[in-house]
Length: 223
Ligand code: DC
Image 1 (cartoon, helix red, strand yellow):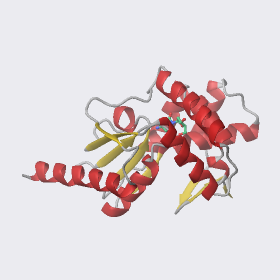
Image 2 (spheres, helix red, strand yellow; image 1 turned 180 degrees about the horizontal axis):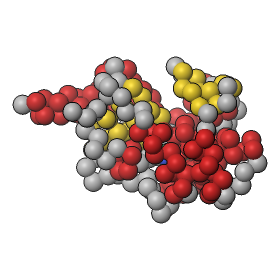
Image 3 (cartoon, protein in one colour; image 1 turned 45 degrees about the vertical axis):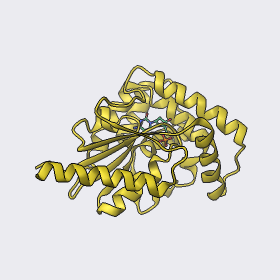
Image 4 (cartoon, protein in one colour; image 1 turned 30 degrees about the vertical axis):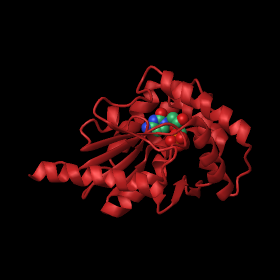
């Protein structure tokens, strides 16, 4: 039997990371934050001065990334880059490098490598549509643009990173537009994904809803 996957997709700052992590914890599953991989390619490209339109160079970078995930830390070439990764400049560059099909396919095997027993919860843009099309449960989270800007603002503040709410709101809108309009694996709800509008839902309620869907599916599968 194949290792079960729960795919949680949605736009920037929709809360998918927090929800996915908590669902993984509750089930004792592994967790993949696929956005971190795109952010890592972005960070490495910013550091090495690689242009955002150099698709072949970026794909090579994606294939050879020396990265380790340990607890909440992300280690790139032996350096803890957990903070640098969530800089908005890195998010913006990530959305650009993610447009290249060669970069996306270079990251495909790496992402699928996270699928290990007893199961995986993966969050991103195309977890249900492209990376794990056979996921046992697919969820597409949405939240209003204002709510997402506010969440990202609080997230950054918590990490001690300076942010401006108006600028954040504008940047999120630009990234959403780019992620939705790109030709390959755009941000889009898979036909078989369950949508959840969570602007006014506390995170506990979102986690509980996903867990209930999962349990109901398990009962359905065994009965
Ligand atoms: O989830 P995030 O905001 O950390 O992702 C950063 C960027 O990476 C996002 O703007 C688009 C890209 N991305 C993607 O194209 N596909 C994914 N599965 C995850 C992220």
